[in-house]
Every structure is written in C-alpha cells, then in structure tokens.
Image (cartoon, rainbow, N blue to C red; front, side, top):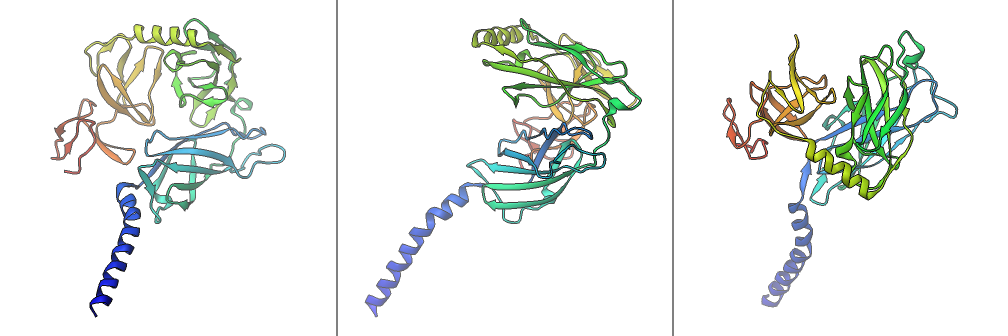
Length: 338
C-alpha cells in the first residue's frame, strides 16, 4: 500500500510540473477586453480602387492585415457595401479571450458595422466589418471639392495644395513608401506641416481631399513622391523640434503654437497650421486634453483603449489625483480601480 501511495504521489507531482508552465504562462498574460479600430476608406462609387486602411493606437494588439473581401471585377457601384476582413495580433503580454464578441469592438473614421468576430487562437482575432453603402463621388454633385497642385516644400516638410472652391476644410494624411505614417488630420488651411513625422529616409507622399461636410467629400488626390535622405530628415526633424515653444495658457488664451476658440457648441483648439484634433488626445502646454469626433474639448470621464480617464471642467486631464466623484487616477491619468 505504501509503494502504491508513493507511486501516485510521484505521478501527481509529474502531472503538476508538466502543467505548471502552461498555467504560469496564462497567468502572466492580460486579457484584452475590447478593441478600438480607426478605418480610413478611399472607396467610392465609380472607382475600382480597394484602398482601405485600418489602424489602432493600442499597445496591446496590432493590425496585421486588412483585406476587402468583395472587391468588384469592374468598379464599385452606388449602394455597394464593401466588406473588410481585419486580422489583429495580440502583444506577447496579452491574449484574446475565447468569449470575445463583436460588441467589444468599436470603430471610428469611415462608417460601418461590425458583422462578426472570429478567434483563430488566443493571439489572433479576425474582425469582419461591413462599410456603409457607397455614394457617388461628391465632385460630381453640387460642390466643387477638386484639389489641385499638390506640392512639397522640401526644406521644411510642408505640404500644400490649391484651395477647392466649396471646401470648408480638408483631410490630409502622410505616407512613406506606400505605408501610412499618420492618421487622417483635418485642417481648414490649404497646407499642413508634416515635419515632425519625417524622421527617417524614404519616399514620402501625402493625400488630401476637400470636405464640404460629413456627407460630401471629394476624391483623394496624391502628391508626387519626395525622396528624403537621412541627413535631410534629421535637419527637418531638428528644425521642427527647435521651432516649438511652450507657454502657460488655458482655454480662452492664445499660445504661440495655436489658440483656444469657443463657439455655441464648446471649446476647441486651433493649431498654428489651422488643423484641429478629433477623436484623440492632444498635449497643449504640458496638459492633456481630449477632443471628440467633432474636434470639441471633452470634460468628465473619457474611455480610451479600455481605460478610463477624467478631464476637469477646464478640460485638463487629472493625474495622481482623486476625481470629484471619489475615484483615484494614477500618474498616467488612468483610473486605478479604486
């Protein structure tokens, strides 16, 4: 009997030792509870392009590949709904739970609907998205949103173009070697300074389109390719850093890099190049502010990449403090769970 018990004990220990590395590995990974994606689609009726970019600002996972699964043999027609298949890869320290659902995925940028999600492994998640029905190109309608004469100022990294007659603003984006460098920026000016994003050698282009409103946007136009050597990139980046200054200011005051403005809706920040931040954070004179999808400053609680942050009545993000409703936020501004 003693020998039998001893054998059982040894066998149990062996099973535990074999299983423990897996248990240890699982316990060191953090579950991803939600996914946030930004869609930038160039698809429009009458075009045969399938240029869609899906990005994320999360450090927990990355977008590995995006494919359009119903690309037409000829060209897109009005009413077509492009379908996307987006592959996500979790960082080594994170994993996708087996019960991950489509309700945990949010999208911004181009409008669409999450149709389903599929988890092929704990590290890979596939998100299926159906974009809204395509409209005819706005330029063929009542608004002249055609953008011409796209040009680079090669000494400063400034992109410029000729104003469109009916455009109230412009959307612009930087590319390097065919890959996106920035998200889509919005500006009311006919130029945008990309100097702070030109940090290495390569071939750079930018795209721009005129915008009348959210329902009427022109076609994306692409600039000529500009080769930047490592020496020039260093000079441009250095000049960009040296030209930025910091002054103490807040809502209602003007800084050397931009100005706070207010209208009937609320406060917004106009940068020196007349651009403004949407659906993102911006550090202004050392203080973080969050701006909604319309570019207006947000107050109160903000949900960002599965964490919660609090912005006071002046828009400034709290850090290492207790919020008015009694919650504690850490040095990074995120709620600590207390």
